[in-house]
Amino acid sequence: MLETDTPGALAKALQTLEREFAALPEFSAPAPDCLDGVLDEVAARLGDNYPYFHPLYAGQMLKPPHPVARAAYALATWINPNNHALDGGRASSEMEREAVAQIAAMFGWREHLGHLAGGGTMANLEALWVAGLLDPGKKIVASAQSHYTHQRISGVLRLPFAKVETDARGRMDPNALEAMLNAGDIGCVVATLGTTATGSVDPLPEILALRERYGFRLHIDAAYGGYFILADNLAPETGAAFDRISEADSIVIDPHKHGLQPYGCGCVLFRDPAVGTLYKHDSTATYFSSRQQHLGEISLECSRPGASAVALWATMRVLPLVRGGAFAQGLNACRRAALALRARLAADPRFVTPFEPQLDIVVWAPQIGSLPGSAQRIFDEAARRNLHLALARLPGAFFDSPEPEILSLRSVLMKPEHEQWIDTIWRILDEATNT
Image 1 (tube, rainbow, N blue to C red):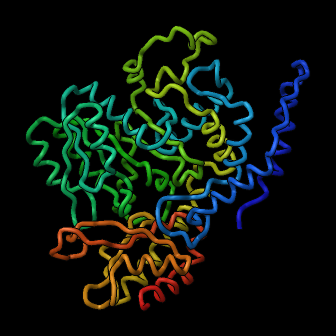
Image 2: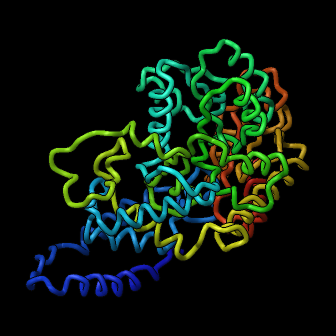
Image 3: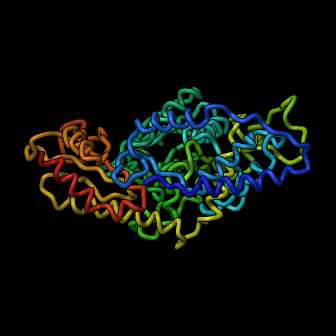
């Protein structure tokens, strides 16, 4: 079941890489002892995991890297470049610039400033750090369903933070946002295009209309949902949000989610390259090999793996970020899978599914009084049958319940293969529910 063509391609690429250094005097690294034994032990330890690579894993946001990403990442580790300064990662730094430029172009930006980061948290940190420097002391706000990292980051930056109420579909409520804006103390609004719990997409056109009136900075957390800008089967209101994403001041996206990359690979983008002056600093030892800008000069992180940039660059050579291409078709399949599962749930009186998924995340709960158990029991019974779901505590209002919170079930159908496995997933879910 595990893809096994990568090692052969990697061995061939290693020969090519070695030829690139043929001018050097002969040198042989000592052969490692007990390599097979240790790797067998590692493989046995790694077996104590959920099968994230398999279509029956339909729980959290875990998507297998593309084979070329795995191979390119591993190949780069023989050099082990560091994309902080050009001294440590000349080729990989250039590949990072090219890869980031392609992501920016996907959002409609030719002029931009951006780089890769260790993940969405670090990328969001940089965006909010810039917002705090441009509007010192002003409040950061995000929806009540936004990722918890925004509140944490605001605390790290010592900036005030507040949550904006959501509607019954988990999207930021523009009326609630405007009521907060009237106080005049908000410097940055974070709009989420793809919340982690429900995949909800904040109503960006309405938020942009409020920006025209109140003049705040707009950051978009599209860590999960950003690549869906390429999908052609979104609902009109969801598509309308992605159509306006280029009007943001900053955007975060995670290639290690739908971008088919190994963890961790995030990306932060700024529409105005002039924010680079906010990063200005001096280094006594690292910025002397080139007059070109070093990526460390526009990043809060210092050492960063060049292998992440190499893997991302290679993947986009195979799967360009274009509408209608193979990569975009994979996203379409994920959304179709989510719609198919939700349709079955909605037609079944045993379940309550509060709203149609905007992306590829489905949430539902057992109908109160109609089942012998709870969401936790269904979760456990499904796992015993090798179907791995997820649990989430969501507002009762989503389910038209007076309870403040409902323990619900959740599936992230982020593998294109999920579309072909809906019948199997439903059969196991039905068995687990009736047990």
